[in-house]
Length: 135
Image (cartoon, rainbow, N blue to C red; front, side, top):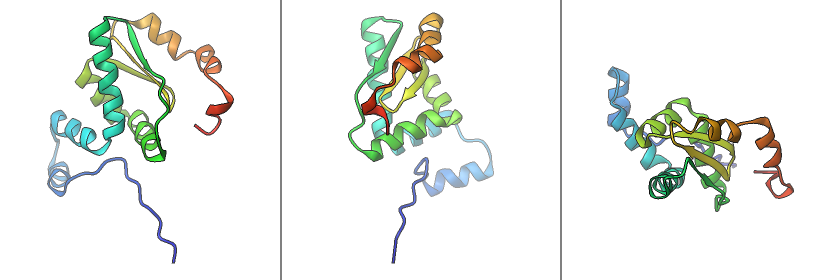
C-alpha cells in the first residue's frame, strides 16, 4: 500500500478553523498561524527584517539555499499565497519579493527603485544558474 503525504499550506487549529467558519479572524491570529505553520520561512523573513532594521539598507536578500524539501515548500507556500504574503508584509512593514526558493528579498516600503530592479525580467534572467535548475 502506498501512503501519500498530504501537505497543506497551514496547520490550522480546530478552534481557529471554527472561528473562520463563523466569520472573520484577526490578522494577529492569522499571522500566528503562519508563524507556527511555516517556521523555516518565517525565520528567514524575520532574519531579513532584522537585517533591514539593523543596517538601514533599502533591502535585504536571502541567498541561503533551504536545507531540505520541507523548507523549500514552506518558502513556496508563503510567497505563493496572497493572504500569507500580505499578512507577513504588514506584520514586518516590508514588501516581499521572490525570484526563487533561495532568493527572496525584503524591501522597505519606500525602496521602489530597488524593488522594481529585483522583480525585473533582467534580474530574473541574471539569477539563473545551473545549480538552481530544480530549485
